[in-house]
Image (cartoon, rainbow, N blue to C red; front, side):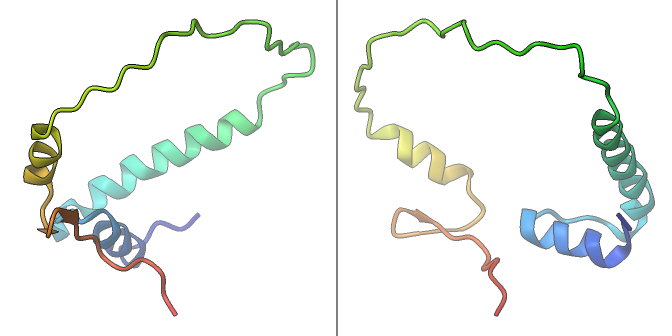
Length: 94
């Protein structure tokens, strides 16, 4: 995958991050390392590995905890809110 300035600008827009133009080269290197690692996972030989799903997570009782302060605290962390909702950029392109 080609990691160019256009892709970095699009990722910055979608993630609502500000990336300084001087940081593009460093970020490009980090993203390349991550993508190379993911590609190396595809090359692993898993022929002799048996996958089992015998273990179950322990169950616990569901408890409803009503704390009206939690939504307010979450909304304070968002860069943009309106009427109790998060405002996010449009990501579907026509």
